[in-house]
Amino acid sequence: MKGSKKILALLLALVLLFAFAACSAQGDGDDSSAASNVKIGVILLHDESIGYDKAHMDGINAGAEANGIDASQIIWKKSIPEDSSCADAARDLAAQGCNLIISDSYGHQEYMKEVAADYPDITFVSMTGDLAASSGLANYKNAFTAVYQSRYVSGVVAGMKVKELVESGTLTKDTAPNSFDADGNVKIGYVGAFPYAEVVSGYTSFFLGVKSVYENVAMEVEYTSSWADETKEAAAAQKLVSDGCVIIGQHADTTGAPAAVEKLNQAGTICYSVGYNISMLEAAPTAALTSASNNWSVYYTYAFKCLVNNEEIAANWCKGYADDAVKITDLGESCAEGTQEKVNEVIAAIKDGSLNVFDTASFTVDGATLSEYKADVIPDADFEHETNVIVNGVFLESDAEQFRSAPYFDIRIDGITENASAEG
Image (cartoon, rainbow, N blue to C red; front, side, top):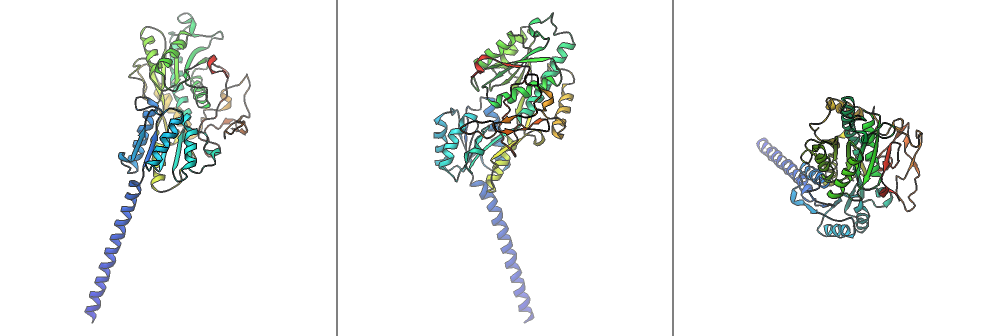
């Protein structure tokens, strides 16, 4: 009888052991199944030939790999204009069973919002958009990076170069009289796409980065009215250099401006380039100093993890240097001595909070320091500027927790002029 009880106990233990193993195996299968059930649709304004879109594509692929999502589970819609074609693309992706649909351009957002309203069980993310908070849609999201931080750092790189040119005697009123304005400021330029807050925020942070190293600069902004037009960007850069600008920054997506600056540099003109999204060293090996850039894999890894775990993606998301979501590309051979050390110092200060890019003590508007500024942080039909975003002397740009992720710094500060096409 005792032997029978021992055998029964042993059999029971074996049954429990196999049951536990089966449950564990089933649990592993559930995790794998969760990732395998994901299908992601991506709407791109251009394709991998354009640095901005390529950066998103790289981030999406990295985020998918980090979450066990196979490349076959991503459907790409490339070269989709900022018109009803976006809505058509989004509806097609929904019909194909995508449970997350992403678009990468600001001009896509109205169409994404329209389609999101018809598919409440699908999550839609408009990158760089600003309508999530006012949309009333729980499945419609926005995301951006604090790229103004890396633009500021790229401006520091440019400022180091301006300082070197002046202090070495290479750039003087005798050697390059056209490169100084009537007040003795060194002229720098910027090729912008559109006069949106996103671009204004970017060129202002770049300018402030330059001024943090070399105070006496003035900047001219030339708009192209296109996110990616190589010919227009080249022409804008050429115009700025002909006006005497010695540094050309950009918020435009092709290599047009850096390539044009490189050609002029090689011909003996004092001019250098700071790019965007990708390294411009291939297009401008001598003229390119660096590029402000994003690490989109940080966001996509986060968003895809939420998708796999059936967790809510934040309605507004924005991260910067503290989370390695922004960066500058490798420094070019023409950078001033000591630039890397200065860059490291500035990034550390941004990370620990001792340096705020939009510290109101660093700029003026019509000669005055701002103590308050009401921004249009939640766009509505009236586009009213209703929310004070200056707190303790700092303009709180892209504060996703309080306001929104997309930039709303649209202030025109002293020292910067825009061309006539920006008016209206």
